Image 1 (spheres, rainbow, N blue to C red):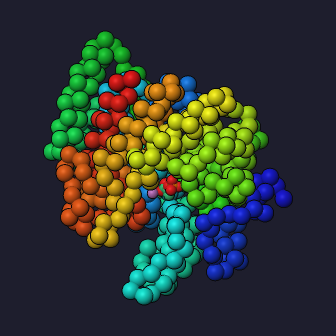
Image 2 (cartoon, rainbow, N blue to C red):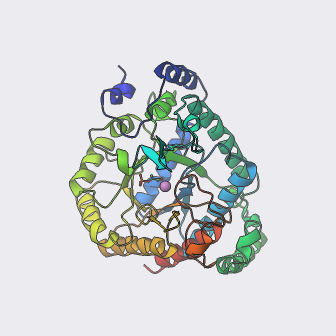
Image 3 (cartoon, helix red, strand yellow):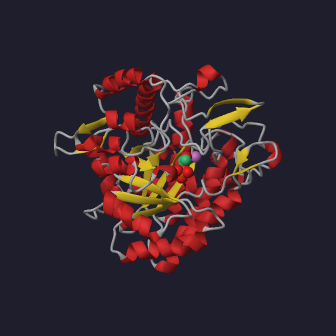
Length: 442
Ligand code: PEP
Ligand code: CO
């Protein structure tokens, strides 16, 4: 058995119960022959940028849908998500004066861990929805049956999305002269949109000045954009792992960065084992029950050479817990000399359900967890390295609060997520301005 298959003898949490293994094997064989979605050299480039984050010289903005869907791989949808990411990034770059590493939860974020394996509606029990890569969202026995051919659709959908993302970011849309064009429709009229417009005017002035001076660097016309997802379904990510011809080392070429979720980070589990064998930059989600010993053991296993940029800890404690749980973790990891980037996921520790049955999050809780993250790192003298969020570019009503003042009663209006509630573009901009303030007030 090759090293890349050593995980197969271990327990892999959260895997689908495929009804027909021989179908799965056919799909995996087909995936194994398909071209890479990203190149190993690009993964290394991202690793270098994350090393700058470890050194305190850059900030990560990672985000996108909780769960992408096949139906959502449209030009409008991808453009709106990128637009949101670009707007947030420009707020951070301009207002906080920090280089921003832009990573999408896109082009592969098709599989979801679930707290319960089944879902019951009106007395009917069916397998839980595990993401479009596994089964269908519709609540019927047929749709909920895991179908391995969906792995192949996930690959093609990722390819389409990544193609659009590369075209938008390299083909003129991400040009800084477009800063105003990103601020359209419902967002332009929100308080954050108006604040953004002011900032965009200042950027215009600065660009005009630079241009008059004869400076027109390439960085003003295109941006570096990276893809990432939770590598949950190991058969998929293993099938897309290739040995890099330059270095002879294996990379998961389904995305630039992959992460291990809170529910699959067992030290003796298959996910940690698989991740220890690939050379991509990787993340691990750390919830409020994580002990410093666990964090140190994860470092030993996943980054034994202490390479900066290889390992990012994505903490997701909850607003009410972060100030209590994060300090010891950061302190002990720092004292060990380990080089890791710390980024804050202020979403997954702040989810609750309304009486109407909508899973939601308060923007105030999200902002409070981010504030706690900055407080802890500032107090310890460590670098608050970035944020990891769930957002969409569309005018949805899934999270409450923000400049548009969305309240619980509004949630039913446009509640469109296939999994967790996402910030809409206006709320995402609210967040970006707040993060820029926190960053600046160091
Ligand atoms: C997620 O990122 O959508 C997720 C499930 O997060 P976590 O593993 O932190 O719960
Ligand atoms: Co989520």
